[in-house]
Length: 182
Image 1: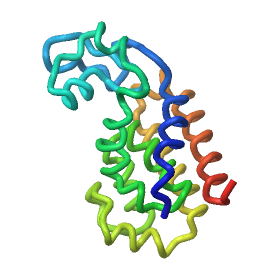
Image 2: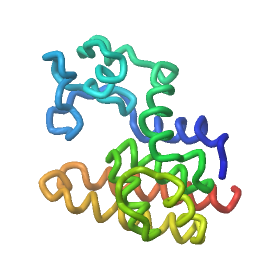
Image 3: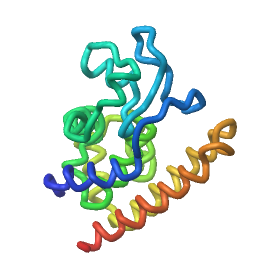
Image 4: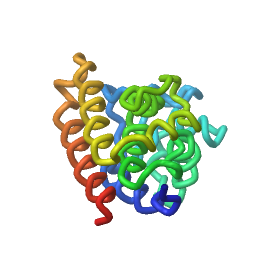
């Protein structure tokens, strides 16, 4: 279990997430809850940022976000919720990246492959089940589950599928290297 992986994983995540966008077809751009148009910057949607800060997140605010602004959000809302500090190196990265991309579905997919209760809460029972498996095998099975989820989004896969698939492959390759100690 590796507690020092968060900063490295956050850097890798931000390389995937990119910069500002206000794509109305993006599944995450549903607005900030204060009547402002949805947008995303550094992978954070205006809805999530407004919820996290308790303040409106119009496009002008979202465009100004910097990596140092959002680290706490990523740690609390995604890394900690999936108990990534308690997962083996590599698996922590794969679960975190998908947690950001698909919420608790990430934890539920992990629970599915280790035959734990699929409640989306990675706790002691899930962690004990994870410990019984080979980390590299889990990473590969997790990647398959992630891809199956993406492909189930048939309305959106034609538009976003190539990028989702590339991201899944890149995350998996890096996760395997991390699990190997590289």
